[in-house]
Image (cartoon, rainbow, N blue to C red; front, side):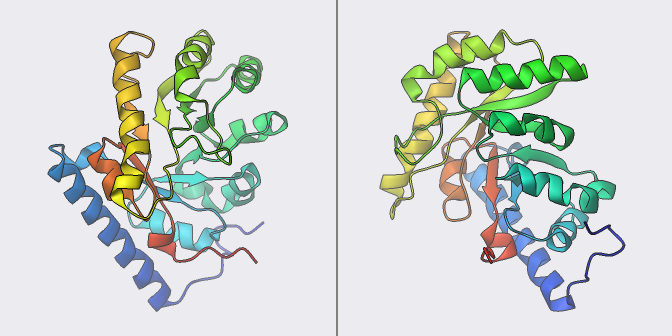
Length: 246
């Protein structure tokens, strides 16, 4: 594992590209929030760092961004040492297998992908042993695609009620992965449905009023998600470039 001192330096052009992209995304997110009648500070940009090397992530963290998200537990643990001195807020945004809970809790402050009660119980039981707490989102499959993780919208109330009874976990809100449509008319409903579900569940008391966060939107559609109420947008390729799966 690379240490902060041994990470290979990027070229000046690489650094300039990343910081320029960060500034552009931040400006666009702020403008979208203000266009929807909110403050730009109401929306946080989460750096989606799947497959991205630690040296690129360090540039972004050094540029004032503090929130990162990984899809895989092994990437969280694999990069933790190289990023430790920058102390990022780390979220797991991909599916979590129950046998990876211990590794996740060592480094992640929030799990955005809770979508079933056995997983939540496993997390809570481990937190009891550690005498710690963790933040979480309920992932909802608003696009209703078979390939997507997440609880069905009509089953979210039952799951949220059960997870709120677990004393070690703090609900922050709801998360979804939008429909990969080709037009706003196709994409928007998966985001508006999450907002409406959140409003309904908070209005009825199923979710606490403070659990109002909505994590939704990615590089190709984050402005549309912000227009529908996103408080966290998960942006990766618009900042770091195409992912390297080699």
